[in-house]
Image 1 (tube, rainbow, N blue to C red):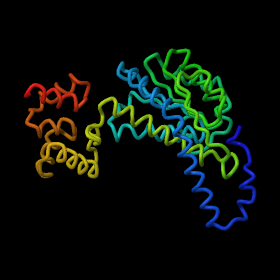
Image 2: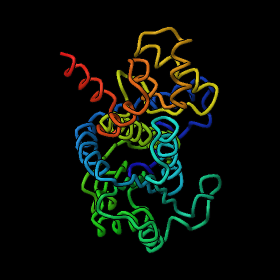
Image 3: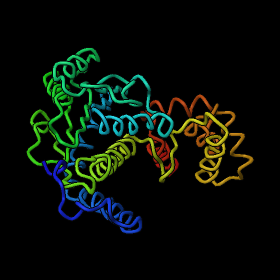
Image 4: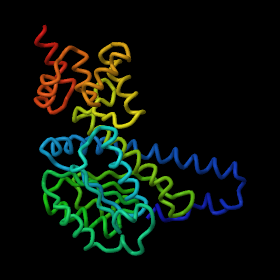
Length: 297
């Protein structure tokens, strides 16, 4: 596996100056970014399929072990505060359990049966979207989990950094990001990890946009749950409605922090009609506003 091999270029890395070392590490990160581009068509196809499953009520299920698992969990954990993705529609399947996010659990990734069992316990079904991440693509726990998910009929997406990875076998969408050898041999938290995070960023963000949780490049599904987010919500409403921020603050307050409802209040709707219109269009603010413009036209 290329991710585990020693690069002749870096065998004397520990004798280099700090300046040269940092430069090499930086170049490795740039290489990780470049490695993602060939995978864009596969990511696009995965997004399109995932959106259809999620529209049927499916859940996002993130699977991984070690660094890859932690990166996957980070991506999923950020969906609720950013896009108000329901907590009951996201599942984390981590080798060693969630305690392994903070510290390594010895041998947890080596048990394929435990991975399969975790998927069964999570009651994964045909509407769910399962994203399994492993730099090597050979991690038994992750392979067992994705194989079990495939047997349940779920949409299976695999992300790995080595061609021909066994993890790809049970997957419908196989996202290969060939980051090659690491500056520090086997340290896949570096190039491989960076590339994985980029792929997950692209995938989850595109999915949320396609599900109508973004409008005009703004996070309109965000819930104003603290002071910083409250101010952000006011700015968003002000920009869309084109009103003063003081007025936007009143709309946000009336909407109890729901940005989409606040926008519609600012456009002259009453709260009941705003909520009903959003429910009719599955929370898609653009669809509501477009329908309003059509009716007025």
